[in-house]
Amino acid sequence: MNLLDIFLDIVREVGLSGFLDILFISIFIYAILVLFKQSKARLIITGIFILSIIYILAQHLNLVLTTTLLHAFFAVIIVAIIVIFQEEIRRFFEQIAVWSLNPKLRKSKLVTSNEWQTEILVDVLSDLAMHKVGALIVLPGKNNVLEYLEGGEHLNGKLSEGLLKSIFDPHSTGHDGAVFIDKGTVEMFGTHLPLSKNFSQLKNRGTRHAAALGMAEVSDALCLVVSEERGTISIARSGVLKQISTEELKITLQNFYNEINPPVQKITHISITRNYREKIISLFLAVLLWFVFVHESRQVYRTFEIPIAHTSLPKGLKVSEIEPQKVKVTFLGPKRDFYFMSGNEVDILLKIPDATPGEQDVTISKSNISFPDDLSLENIDTEEVKVRIEQTIKNKESNNSN
Image 1 (cartoon, rainbow, N blue to C red):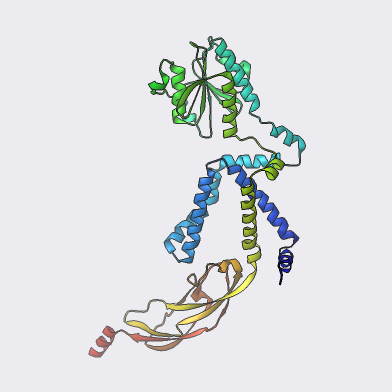
Image 2 (tube, rainbow, N blue to C red):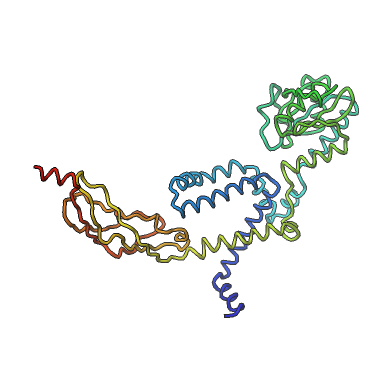
């Protein structure tokens, strides 16, 4: 058989539905890989993959404790994934909406919603710096920062130039505190932040800078500060405080927003010109999944030779012989379920409730056999076994003495 015949056989076996199946799953996996590419989620996914390999090996090697613990872990893994990847999942469904067939939705989302926030913040801080009006603004990163905010007033007003300038007006009662802005909304104003004690960075700077640096030391938030003494703009993040220009402020804000909420890209651009490694991995995984869950879901018969065990006998009796010692048992199930099954998952346990010395025939029924739930028991080659029961030596001596 030449290569062309082999290829045609594969095409016929997979069929149109199979190719469409693989195509859609490839796109789905690819979207997830691209979404997680720049995040720390890669390390978590790698850890889950390693645990999956350990779980499969533990099943194959019959490591009961390891298998039991990992099985409990995977039972709640879906909930854990939702909790760990909640931001990534939100962006994923957002991208699905953007990639929809609605041109108006796609057009509106491709223009990042963070641009107007950047423009407002740059204009307001530049104007405040020019007039030497002090200001302190907190922009949260991916982690919750509410636990570090003390006092202040709840506002929940849409971010605007007029609102910020009115809050930081020297005659305003809340101008000395920090303004907390989240998702384009001024959530709080006049709130207090933890103060830093890193005097090497603070030098001759005031309380606003100490508060900004303090928040940057305990969270991943970006803090913006305007000095009323110098008329300068500074930023604090990741425990570092530095003075920047208006142009640098704009670039910093753009990079910050892109980091915590990456802009949605056109699917045509992603799928044609970039991420070749992710494309190959996605296609490989889709083919593998199709093979395991579709192709290998065919029902097949498998026969295993299982040793016979028995329940405990009354005191003074023991089983001296079971004939035959092993029985062939045939199961029906999906082909994939037999990959790592060596027979260790099947047990035959004889129940001998009325045990007496001598030889007796015991019937093996389905209730005597434990096996995986996904399989069905089709045949037992020997349904009756001979069991020889004897008295123990101590019991014989006791009977003889009597």
